[in-house]
Image (cartoon, rainbow, N blue to C red):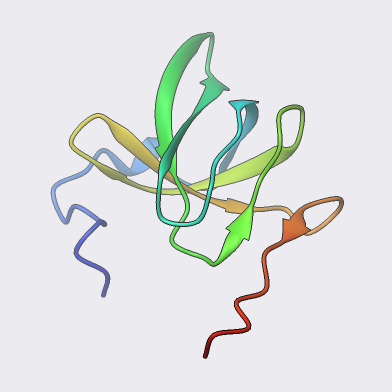
Amino acid sequence: MSNFLSPSADFSYFDKEAIVDETILPFRKGRVSFQGSWWDARCQQNIIIKPGEVVEVVGIHNITLIVEPILQGCSFFLNHDS
């Protein structure tokens, strides 16, 4: 289990959709609109999620939502250094 998923988190947040407001770069914070307010959000995948895209909330760490893309329209970031 990722250290970003809080075992004491309020699970009512999970499996809900949010809309990206500020670009989320790989492993960096961006911002989403979620349940009527703005939240910092981070994705643990090597992708870029652009404003307007819909994401799924899969966890929370402190006050940062952990999100994953809903695969329609997300921009994959390919790391060619591996």
